[in-house]
Image 1 (tube, rainbow, N blue to C red):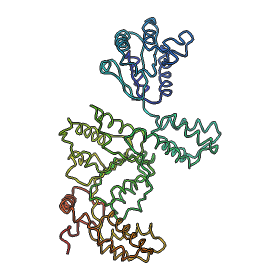
Image 2: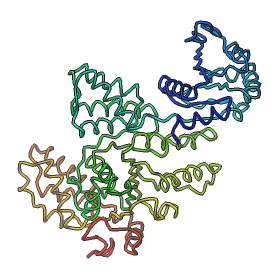
Image 3: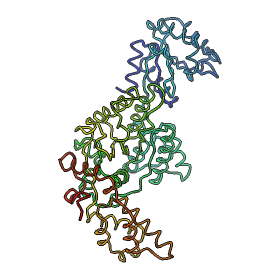
Length: 504
């Protein structure tokens, strides 16, 4: 049900007190005015603390700097006079005993009248004593069609027309922003060069970053990594490449549902986080990073509220990639011991959303310790697929060395014996290979020369890989994956090799 349908239903059902949560005051008021016009028997009255009632010469200034008088004005109107009374900035007065009592009295008397009091505010700030008399209605951010209409309106004022592909990209990039922010950034683009161009998408994304930072829950993560930056993991890369167009309208017309997400389980430093960034870049979708620790607040109910806010924001910004790093650490205490069940409630809200979401939010969760994850997280339907990312094979280590050295020394890549480097670094993860190269560069730099294959081997001899220091944990992960609990990210899986400690 759309906002207008829900709001009109509440008006017809004579709900006396309605609380609308949105930062878009002007857009919400326009929507309310449209609903009042559709019903035909209600006038719209606007009140704020500074100017009192407005838009009507007979009532102008009534209730100025006096919120109690604003409510008394509603009470004194004849019963047969219909109206929607929009009260701006009103939540800060709700704790006042006179305001609270007057609202409770009005809640009784207005039930039989065609009068409705509407409070518009960015957040829900309703005292406990008034919670029963208010009906809360969410006012969603503009949908793609509304954004498209606004973009076309701005284009009409300049006489410019856009190709359908660029128009769709501008609309998709603008999703998750308020209409006012969209107008502001597009007007800035038009003022800069007199027309909208493909490069303006980046300005829209920067505006989106600003909007997300203000929530302090999600981070808008810049993703420049490409699929080609991932060494090995061929099965995983093939799976991702096949779904490159799955968020398009052509896929919807074909009957494909939106991809749901991936759970990447494996050893630390094997490229799970890199994969999340590469997915975002390859699919041209914004990457949102969730630090689950930010969901947990000190006040009762705050954690659950933040979780719902995170979900609403991610859906408003869709299509997007939501990256949750080390989800096993976040929900390791899901039994709720010691936190009054807060973790369990947050987890319940989260996995219910994972199973039921219809929005194009592609969730990429990574985990190092599969034992810490609740069984519900692994059930089919939460994610499209669970991939095990193991230690790279010798062939994959060659690919990883090649990726890094191509970036670091593209001019003399052939001077490095990559096959020997891969052979001499058994059980090294991708992160450990990168650290080995950094150490080798320090060796060369300290002696005023370029680093060599021998420097890399010398650096590798000084590093003890995690595969040896965390042998039991890695054995468990490899056995878990070998039992068919997850799909292997690599074609030539490291599971077929000897486990750490069995090496000659």
